[in-house]
Image (cartoon, rainbow, N blue to C red; front, side, top):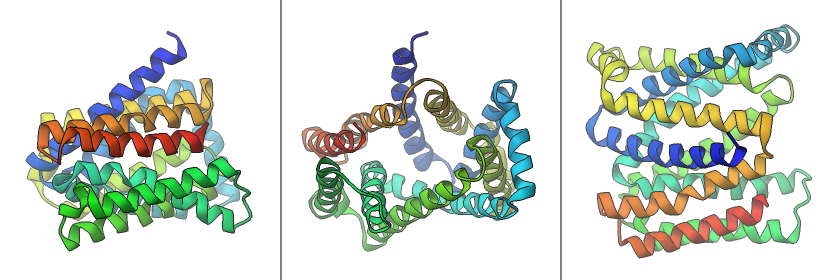
Length: 282
């Protein structure tokens, strides 16, 4: 199977995951998502263990040398629990708004990094500033303007959380590997979700409901496939560009299926954000 077939599969799985999470936000208690998401990711790590098991062993050795890694992985897992829970709240109101978290976060991360000494080329400055302008415009004139004050505040909080998680990832990955990070953070997220919900019906829905299986399963497969492509086959910029290409499609689907503004308007927002993301990646 050629790398670009796998890349096309990643694009399809990413789109399906967005659709299934939207459906789950409308039909399931939002507390199910922080349970079924890490559950399926952990099942994915079990499947991948024959190929990446050595990374777990070396990661455990890293923990002995850098004890703070364990604390950061646990902290990330708790943050992820809160982020997935609140993102379901946002998705229920606007899948379009949720789709803009990724572009705006990347633009802000690049700007923050520039203040920390990272030099950005002219085209990269155009990209990050363009992303921020598009996101602000969507905030003022796109589907996000229809959200309540609480919904808009939730979007801002999730953007800031995404930036914090990126910083945590950067610190952890300079001292250990992605496989250990994936396992520890998702184990923490799963335990936190189970403890926070404390309801058998929520646990049952998270493990057995078909909506949970579809959302968690497609997300987990897309995540494992993304890591496989970035680590073993393709440059990170190519893989992230492929994921960026899903934004216009998800925005159009949100208009056609759930009535989040007109599809032409949504396509325009999506294409503009994707264009600036590609300028940043390539």
